[in-house]
Amino acid sequence: LPHISRLKTYQGVSPSETLAEEAGIPLEQVIRLNGNENPYGPSPQVAEALGSFRDYNHYPDPSQRRLRGALSDYLGVAEENIVAGNGSDEIIDLLMRMFLAPGDEIIIPVPTFGMYSFSADVAGAQAVAVPRDDNFDIDIEAIRGAITPRTKAIFFPTPNNPTGNVVTEAQARALLDTGLLVVSDEAYYDFCGQTLKPLLSEYRNLVVLRTFSKWAGLAGLRIGAGAMDAELAATMMGMKPPYNVNLAAEVALLASLSDTGILLDRVDAIVKERGRMYRLLCEIPGITVWPSQANFILCKMPDGRGLEVYEAMCRRGVFLRYFDNDLLRDYIRSSVGKPEG
Ligand code: PMP
Image (cartoon, rainbow, N blue to C red; front, top):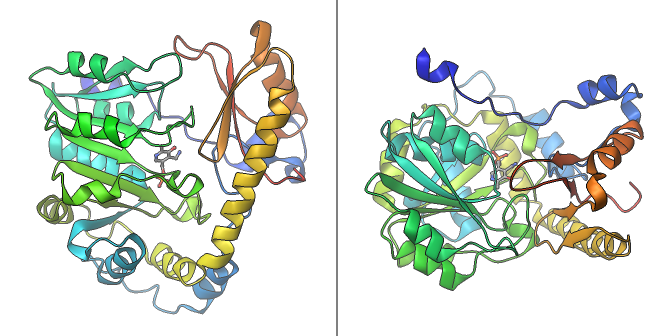
């Protein structure tokens, strides 16, 4: 397996038990701020619905009728334009497999979410990293300059992970006008309210991704969706694993959508806490704090002290994400937690 054995594995976040063991602290002390999860958990309706559902002995619907119906109401997009996935990660992976042959390229403005280069790599293709500017805004000219005959798609999150800033409509239009597939990954949409969804009717080459992992607190159940051109959606429906979204995830999604009030109140609480956290971080001398539209905040640590801070926080049970690479030299990203910790 020459190609697969060269892959750089994708490191997701570890379970709390592993974090506790590695830091030598009791499990109850673990505060997870490294995975941009929702600290409030799912809607209380989810546990109830999962407990009273009886048909787990049946396979889920390969056509996703109920799921697509519910997602259609929620997104305001027709069912034929929607595909549900095992997390939005799966939709990313399906897109790569649909669009990329070995040797093809995608463009990713970096720093960004690691899944794009990972999935492109698995497909035998290459993710061409185009640096963002000093404010982490995407650089349209540099992206245009990186396009080659092998380029098939441009992937970006908006808000971006880990920088927290959004892509403007004008920037998105400039990318869409290249005619390449443009994937607007809106995993953190609910914390900012800005979406490229209205452009779907204008551009057949646009795909908008959403997830229930963040705003709805369902990261562990793995449910996300893509909204796209109907023909593209039909092709994706035809090539996905038939039972890709499990019944528990479907039950949880339906319960969440019947109880959005509490979930949106929690989103508001997270946004409010993000503001408080931002102001507090800005008061610390030497730290550069990036304003964020998502449920996390990125900071550049002063005097190369990031690792020390990261490790000291681990010992106290607070798990953050530490970056130290060519693009992000000594940065820390923290998810927004509960005000009380
Ligand atoms: N896109 C971005 C930008 C993310 O940060 C994440 C989660 N880390 C995902 C997608 C994955 O979401 P899901 O849980 O739906 O697979």
